[in-house]
Amino acid sequence: MEKTPILLVEDEPKIASSIQQWLSEHEFGVEVAPDGAVGRHLALSNDYALVLLDLNLPFVDGVEVCKAIRDNKPDLPIIMVTALGSMDEKLNGFALGANDYLVKPFDFREL
Image 1 (tube, one colour):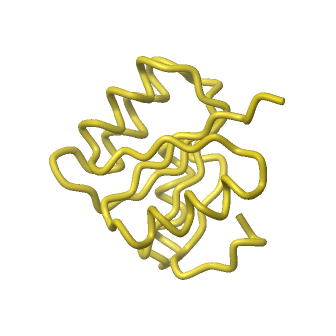
Image 2 (cartoon, one colour; image 1 turned 90 degrees about the vertical axis):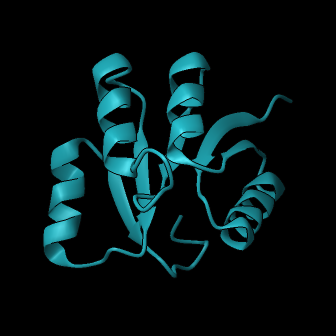
C-alpha cells in the first residue's frame, strides 16, 4: 500500500524528526524541508496530500510559502504548525489560507 505523501516544512531538526517518525508510523510518507525556500520549491514541484507548515523559517518565512502554495495550488491543504499562538496570529493564518492551525507543543493525536 502506498503511503499518503505529506510535506513537512520545519527548521527544528528534533521537532521535524519526531513529527516525521509519528506520521511514518501511521502510514504517511513524509518529506521534510528544512527551510522555507526548500519547502516552497518542493510544495510547488511535487504532489502532496497535505503540507504541514511552520511560520518562523529561515530564508523564506511560512507566510510567503503559504501564499505561493495558495497562488499555485489553491486546493492543497495546509496545516500551520507553529509556536505563534495568539488569537490574532491564528486568525492571520486562516486569512492566509491555512486549513487548520496547531500551536506547538501539541499532542500528536490532535495532528
